[in-house]
Image 1 (spheres, rainbow, N blue to C red):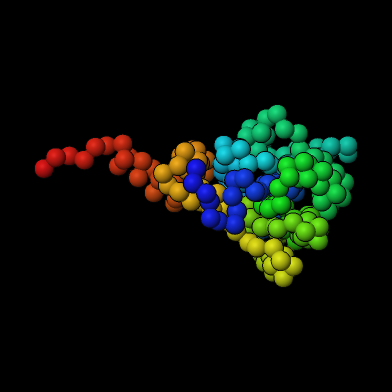
Image 2: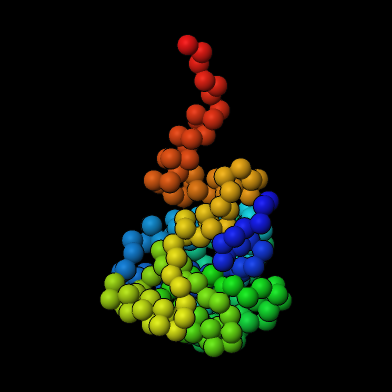
Length: 212
């Protein structure tokens, strides 16, 4: 693959998915729950297919009277990876060893709730000198206002917002590379509008032009 000129690359980044769990997501109001699950699953699928390290977390998933496991769709993407479970709303100290083990400094974070677990974890990572991007459409708050307040707070602290398709194309800017081909299954399965355009282009590439 030619050198990627973008600030986010396959080689320098880590995806961190914080607390994508049914009970936690139940109270999210800033984004439709079906869309949220779809976006997160699409992002996870592409990260896996590109070999981008992905850290998974849960909060209070077990140990109490009720269980709250990770979304089934995410478990299907990473069937052999156990999320890091914890009892604190700030996940940073629990996941920091896994992040450090990658040797990478660009963190791509998404989480529920934006204003609580995602914000606290991201702010701690920034304090430790990491470059943080928050993936807005893979995150959700208990209200739209709470989600937007958290985004502003993160931006003021030095984080940058991005959406999952923007991130995927930043990883793979060159249309002619195997890496771009590798992201198409995730996009086709999980992004409606972009998926239609990809499907159209693939159909036209596959069919030879007719002679006059």
